[in-house]
Amino acid sequence: MEITENAAVDSHAYIHYLHHKYFEVNYGDGLIPFDKWFGTFHDGSRESEARMQARYQRTKQRANAKAQAKAPDRRPIWLRETEVI
Image 1 (tube, one colour):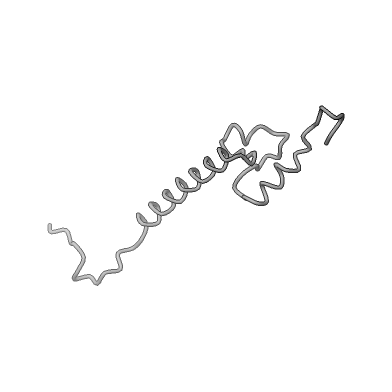
Image 2 (tube, rainbow, N blue to C red):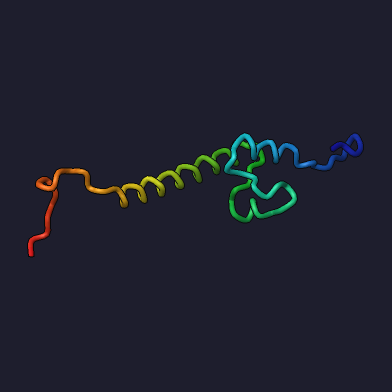
């Protein structure tokens, strides 16, 4: 919102738009600083885009590692390594 020719107040509309464009950012609206505290703030800059992509890659890697750890062994029983007692 423009107040005078040289002064403006952020209406947070762009921040809210970015939340809908990249759903994993700007959860707390522009009025609440939680996004800045938790690293989910995106202001539309290239730096914010790089941080978001890096966070997405880390989340993806953790999810894939967790899925692999829980994945059952689908090989036939005679091909699996067995523990000899």
